[in-house]
Amino acid sequence: MDFKNKVALVTGGSNGIGRASTLGFAGLGAKVVIVDRDAAGGEATAGIVRQKGGEALFVQADVTDAKSVQAYVKKAVDTYGRIDCFHNNAGIEGKVANIADYDEAMFDQIMAVNVRGVFLGLKYVLKQMLAQKGGGAIVNTASVAGLMGSPGMNAYVASKHAVLGLTKTASGEVARQGIRVNAVCPGPIDTRMIHDLEKQLNPGDPGKVEATYQASIPIGRYGTAEEVANTVLFLCSDLAGNITGAHFVVDGGRTSTPGAVT
Ligand code: NAD
Image (cartoon, rainbow, N blue to C red; front, side, top):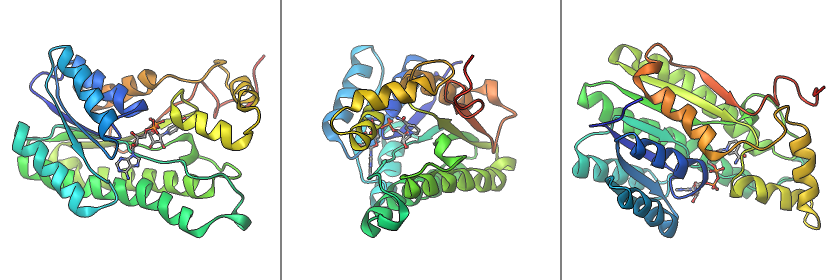
């Protein structure tokens, strides 16, 4: 894999999976644009890239706001001239509660970040990629929650199913222009998000939730942010030239054989 002379833009690049893909792109030669609402984390990610001799730009933005999204695309293009790879990744988990008790404002907030944010990113980055006329590669971060239900997580589950719908639709719209659009579906990954969910499910003993989760994963542990990022890098690389409209599960085998470890 080689991203020399390429520009990669990552939303949610201040932390977790997005930081790992940003560092991965940069390590393989790309100039990277980090988009996030978390300025401290974004500058820290950019600092790591620069320390290693790479080029990085951080743009603070809220992915739910169309003006912010247009602004981050413009800033990326004004700075580096183009966008070749886009990891459309920012997302939130929200609160855990069954549908009958679910807070409506929380539902709207999760949909705003995880669906509207992904849609707006696709819309304005695709406009730019189409105008460049040089193709491109996009990976949306969905989840295994985009493939199955999960009690207590209705809005998150619905939002990640929607990310797969956007991925499939976008892929068909731009395939003839040489732009590939895929999704990655992580299972439980060792970032802030999974540890927040553990605390919500058992505030007194989150470690117990972690142990139960990990026992349900055939590989026997959470995935790492880098393992998800490696899949994103592959899908954005020329090695994946015939792959579009697809989703890749990175979950240690959990959805294939839930609880079935011998
Ligand atoms: P994380 O919380 O470490 O990272 C999410 C990033 O998105 C943060 O930097 C946050 O500031 C940013 N963000 C959130 N809302 C934003 C907004 N409105 N505008 C701009 N930036 C915003 O968590 P993560 O695990 O790295 O999550 C990355 C993606 O992976 C998310 O889409 C998440 O749903 C998905 N995912 C995570 C897991 C997991 O177990 N960690 C599993 C499946 C899918």
